Image (cartoon, rainbow, N blue to C red; front, top):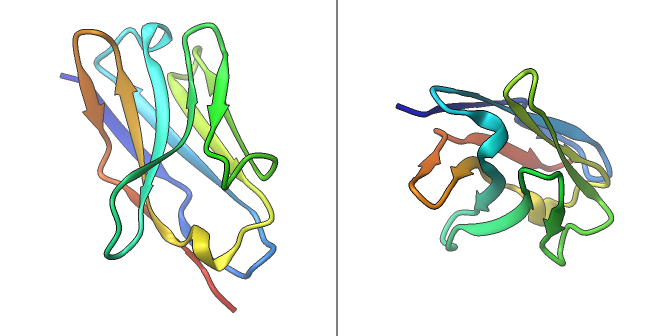
Length: 115
């Protein structure tokens, strides 16, 4: 059973930074495509960023240049560095682990950007 545990969310002022972490267990982590998604109140869940097993990355247009996804296969952890945060980044952020055989989600971590 794959388990994903997110951490690092919180309240931050506009323009500030946060780093989210997602620790995985129960899987051969290096084989997974890892992704970060977010869901704001009243909106659908949307993809934020993804990183494949070779380290290739992709980003939603709304976060490109501000967010950076990375992974540490030795620690079974994926990160999302979020800089220049805006109020519209406020959402619950979810970690996802995907292969052709499965897709697992973490429980989510709240990020609130407000003055």
